[in-house]
Length: 263
Image (cartoon, rainbow, N blue to C red; front, side, top):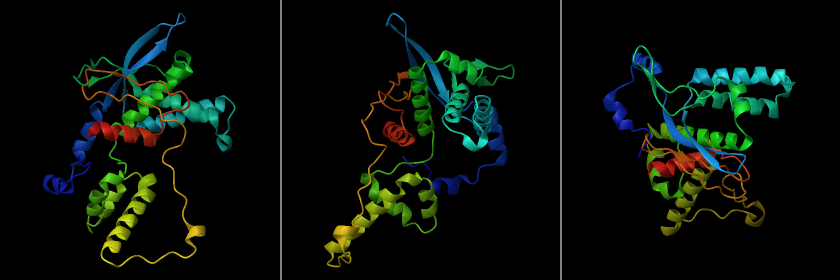
């Protein structure tokens, strides 16, 4: 499924400014998850919640709050480090984690209430493991509702057709995660090399290939692969996001999982 259908946009015309503004009153997209909490006796209790996509204003507010808390905890603006990163994660989740039950405002607008009043309450409520679950859910939600795409070598023909379009090629390229550009260029170059070889016009041989051969890039951040469940397409269902044993889910991994879900 194409993230942006150029021909469709031509027919529908530009989005009206009023439509964008009215959209601010509607609830942001969200996905259901389940938080696993381990009790002192070893039993497990599950809590349903949702993660919503943050508006730009909410993201800026989270950054402001994180800077303020980092300064209060001893970090200065010139030396923002681990404390600021942790404060930002808490500030973001305090805004993104919402209850699973929808409510209605007096004007009829539906919304999901926040689970936590602020980041400080979140920090006092969640353990490190629970925080990891919530952060992974946040990455999955961002990937699920993002227009940014990941590159799959099996789709090389599709990307070649896209980029060969003189008018809309740059638009399609802008929709691809920039960290995937090197892999796209390499795949296209290999395709050109194969085609040139088949017609008897091979590419020039590189000089000192043994010394200048590029190192094969590794995908992801390395380490063991963590299996993660994704949000169900049915809004009435919730899926568990297990806590990784060694690291948090990266943005790239989240986009790959979300892409598989959309197929």
